[in-house]
Length: 331
Length: 134
Image 1 (cartoon, each protein chain N blue to C red):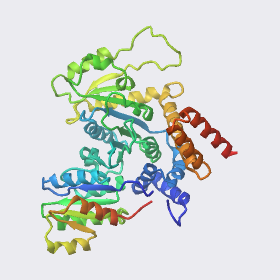
Image 2: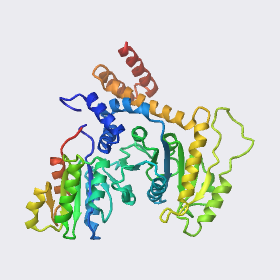
Image 3: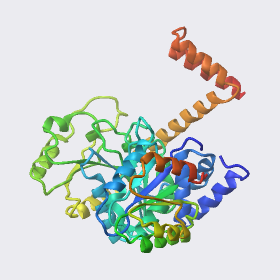
Image 4: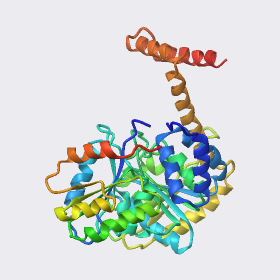
């Protein structure tokens, strides 16, 4: 909290400066967003209407598959095309101490002094889906600040951290050669949300075979039945890159640009709608939690939780009771 | 916010390749609950200042064992001040002769940590001296 200062005025000042290209102001707004301060909300109110122009690209894959190296290689290709690019690189927070080692910049440091490259590390702060809970909002801030492309690098993921697909317009899943057999490629989860699958470390033995196996196995089944509103399975293009040397990176950038154009034409803007829904749900959950901590409702919430802990009340009934209390309190 | 972790940049400017100390400190501060941005070896002053600005860190910790601290550190503190980061705590670790400490402090360094400094000493100093910001 800011004492003796008006957070709204300060937020607007920072937001205007960030829009105007002040990178220090942009960094401060991002910190406020990460820390969920009142300043962040006021700044986002100004910035969000300006966002929605950038191409948000999620990059995910197992630890050590080469995400940071690929992002660094993409930076080179994007800058060669004269476009402004921002990066959000998420690394995990310790579940024990809350500390984090954010090491993704190590491979991206050659762009110091280039105002059209902005890299920000984020700790996941206990959020489990491969991102931090504030990553989507941070991407909107970068979008509003005028970056044409925002690369969102997840923590090293396993099989089911699919949240990035909702945060991004285009999701790239990285695979390393010889990381699994054909059965791995037909398991549900991460590969299903890929718009592009990249087999990185293309100079290693087995890379081409891995790519061929993925191409063969990622074909959607034909004659599918099921509810009409269920999204059709994706048929991701499979590319091979060697991020450390840049081989295949221009082709990846071209594929990203093609997907950006294709995504814009989708009825209802699938990814955008999913992202909006996820954001509203997350804020709604935060708001509800805040209300339950308020002076008028906290005693009731504590009592309800005590009752559930003692098995006097089931969790569903407790939640309904609290929702009713919030509704009464709002009138 | 009171409970947010402090964010620290651990940077290794200059040309020496001895990053064990920086890595041990980065890992140790992680275990002390800090969010530590580590940028790797052979950083120019511009790289350090850019990373500090984009990451909006509370602390910049510089590890230098090459003897070039009297050249590198003032350049970094000057760049930080020029880019409006005058409220960032700057500390230096490594092999720094006692005779140079006063000059480094003059250049804006809050503390110099020599060999044998414990992680806890550094962590306590940062917690006590990093300026709370909005």
